[in-house]
Length: 95
Image (tube, rainbow, N blue to C red; front, side):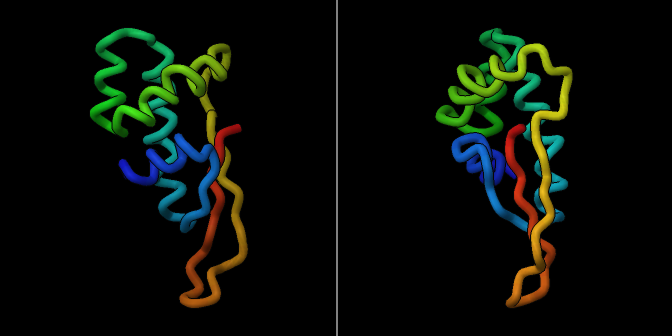
């Protein structure tokens, strides 16, 4: 989860399997909500959960972007199945 959240935070859009995207959504949305608090304790929690670089981006760019929004910061879009093994693919991105 940590590496997927890190990638999504930095790229703001990633392609993964549908199951991973559905698991990632609540994890990342809680991080953005935590970033809205703007306290040193919330900053430390962010750093422990996704690393310093991603925590900085959440606190400085993503959380202020969704200041008035109550939730639903991400969108999952289904794609065609992967050719090699037939796994359902999805794109998860910030709204």
